[in-house]
Length: 467
Image 1 (tube, helix red, strand yellow):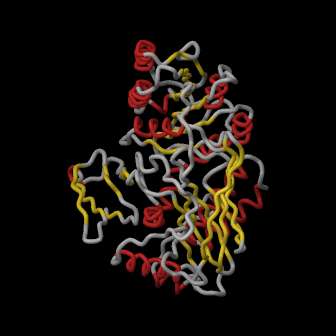
Image 2: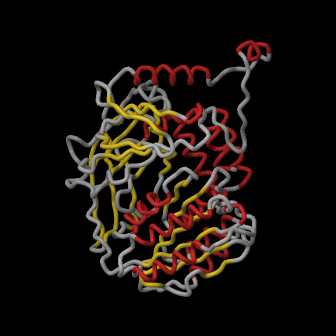
Image 3: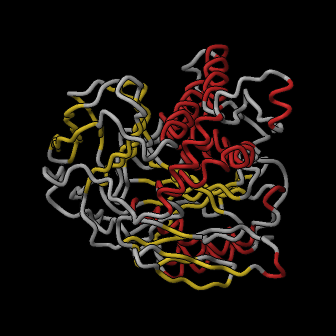
């Protein structure tokens, strides 16, 4: 696996497989791994760590095949915001799945949560709720994170046995009964997401989250997880979600969440683009922005030109505004995959709105089907059929996506032979005058370049997400 990045990578790591890393003449990393017995019989997870001293910045990856065609873009904003630590302590509500489908994962769950508890500060408090068909309290109430209290909680966690169905709603509901309004509370939900008991309507989950002032961080274990439901839950609390596979590092993921939890967050954040008319814009964040979070927008534009980008956000001391200017290109052909990534973001947005009752079901299904066909994406409304060239010709099937695939393959070959290119657009007028706090800490599983590499795995990944 080769990794290209215009920004410094200080380390890469692959659990479960032995291997070695090196760099080429352009400074790009290459990791060569060795599978046991020649099999990829365990999940392959690659982690990278960015240099912690990277600047705050704005990056734009456009695609516009000609001046007359509509352009697509991906925008990544890495904020440099002064977010202060919450020194008075934070409450952590752990809502843990112990249903029968967690049988092979329950020990890893207990070990990971136990290690995360051990890293809390004495001024922090924790409360643990577990659920299967019904929900139960593991700790009777909020418990100070002292060494002795953590030890006792670990003993109880290690004794948990998996059984029954999966009633996530009741688990959350029971945990929320213990909330105290004068304490900042973050919820860590760990589940395989196979919801089959109690309330299962995503709209009701969304309404439940909106009733409580909490930040929820969702961790999904296994390939049968219900990703759309977890997204609905996290969107309702302005939180975020990620996957934890059986070969993954649950402790690292929870501690990454703790880094965000332990600091103030920005409220009512919004990115506004003027000067160039954009449309059909989707984003990966709600009103809150956490420490170390990157903000991603996908959108379309008709004509290139000078644009102004504003980030407005509410801090404790009031609203602040950050501004920069950059050019949307009239023609840019280096990254044709951006069109399909934009279409994927549209589909996910429509699915989310449909799940919470904000989008008509018939209209949503038709729009998703049209996007899936036009951009060659497998969705709940489309399938992918593989035929030979002769079969296409014999059946007189028009191959609208053939040219798109050829453009993508040619662009990938060109990029593979070239050094990595910076996509930063605010060099002449930086949007932020400070470095982001530890933005590279922990790194991640993939960057946007890897999204492009994974585009052809989308049919498989979407099926795994849907279970």
